[in-house]
Image (cartoon, rainbow, N blue to C red; front, side, top):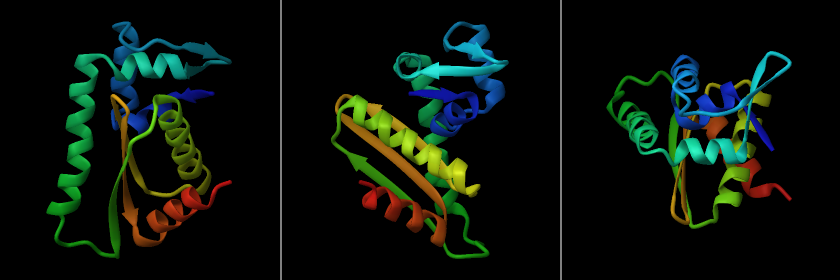
Length: 143
């Protein structure tokens, strides 16, 4: 399983520019394949476990929930779902990959954040009611 730069940005909440800076600082490791960055599960796990990176990701993740709660002028029905799963790292990475793939495939405006601590994964989905509920339904119905 491999992730591209946009998927890592989606998972972490960090911009691709910030991720490129982390690449220059050697905090994020990956390889270029046909001119595009590719990151293995191990690359992503090492990056997510770095204390400096974890702090930046936590700030972005918390901002999604804060922004959702503070926006009192929503123009459509919106959902912010926080999914807490007691799962191992491999299953967490597979779940993150599933959400990334579905969000990219459907071209939605869902905000997605992921965090893994010990044997506990947190996924945050925020977007329109139809998109978030459809994504969650697809997750629970997958074989």
